[in-house]
Image (cartoon, rainbow, N blue to C red; front, side, top):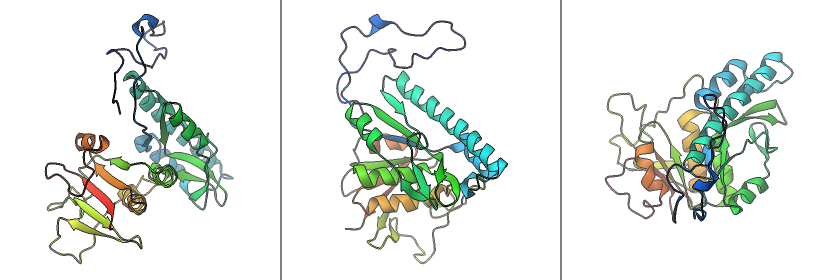
Amino acid sequence: MVSGSSLPKGVGMDWSKRAECSEISLNVDDFGDQELMELSNFIVVHGAGSFGHFQASKSGVHKGGLERPLVKAGFVATRISVTKLNLEIVRALARESLPAIGMSPFSCGWSTCQRNFGSANLSTVTKALDSGFVPVLHGDAVLDEAQGCTILSGDVIIRYLAEHLKPDYVVFLTDVLGVYDRPPTEPGAVLLREIAVNEDGSWSVLKPRLKDSSRQVEITVAAHDTTGGMMTKISEAAMIAKLGIDVYIATTNHSVRALRGELRGDVIPDDWLGTLVRFSR
């Protein structure tokens, strides 16, 4: 993100009061006459992980039914968890002197209808970007016009943002190298390096050439994942690619080059391990 000068090491933006310290951590003199960093426009979107999927799954928030006490309690519990995670991520970025601002879809007034986007005003996000902030959004429990409530996936949020804000590229971070032809824990699993998305939304594997081209790619979803896991990521990535926006799916170790824009072009470097999803022009 940083293209110009940066703040001195150790000068961050998280001045929160910590339990082990009675004073707020801030020394105004550390800033001196430092100029603000020149930042590329970035938006961060994270999922819920262990900070929300279990609460939502156990209570059935994703299925709706706010008239049931368990669902309403689960809605509250899910939002407590996902906003707690959001705060931790915002603080981590702030400690690195990045002007991160947490934004919850529910608090921004976003809602769905039959689990599809219903209402989502992006003015707060765009104003934050224009003001030099880094919006940090997350998967959230939201109200749904048809079923009362549901879970709005971070992957779906990314697609919506891509449709309206037209980023240069999108990077999905995962805990595996990318998309495989079967669960990566299975013997013989093959990393799919490049996926081409067709006009009708269907997709095919370009690299590597699979020995059995008729074999369907097998994708599993964890029982507690209420938003579809890797299948949702691929589906949303395909819709983003149809917009002409390249999507990279990679682990944190291999995501840096993608985030820097170093992988943009027709040929994927052999030493980069991940999955590129792009529109088949």
